[in-house]
Length: 249
Image (tube, rainbow, N blue to C red):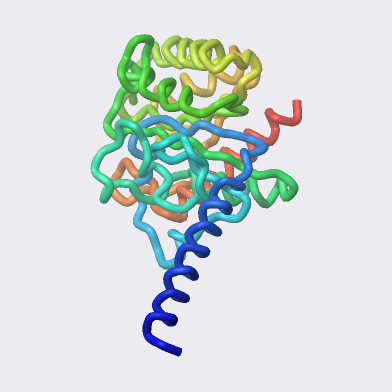
């Protein structure tokens, strides 16, 4: 075989492989169930990753920054429209949530849209605020998108806020209206330790239909604020338990 023939074969093979990848991308399925994950740093994920954490999660897809679904890999918050530097994006409760949902719903594909920003208050997710606007704009890039549920983890910035329930109820109402889903399931997650904001979140479940609460009891933090890796995985599983309960209603 001449050098020219060998080079030609290599070139043709490379083109075939690229075409195969393009076809595979085109065939990436639309997820059966889609969940939006928003909030501040614990939702963005600050727990250190371990070997294997960057492997794709079976039957789970992540929305990238171009509005396309790709296999879900950590860090899940890397495509967030307003995230902090990439080095700060690590393990979030989304990882535990994704694994648990995939296990409990083996016949379904799961889609995650991660859009959290560390160091934010709930006021920054209010009507007309950039974090909320940018999240809705990101969702609008996806054709015929239906969001089945929202995971919310925020409160460290509003730890003693006695009006948090009012603000959170407003957020749920706006999301349901803007996403055209009046039955949108919404699960809030407690912050670490005892705090007024946790009491306010607990009241949401009693006052707003189709809402749930992921408890933080017995979870651990590595810096007084951020959950460690094991606790993030447990919290994510608790989010999934609540979401599955709401979806069955």
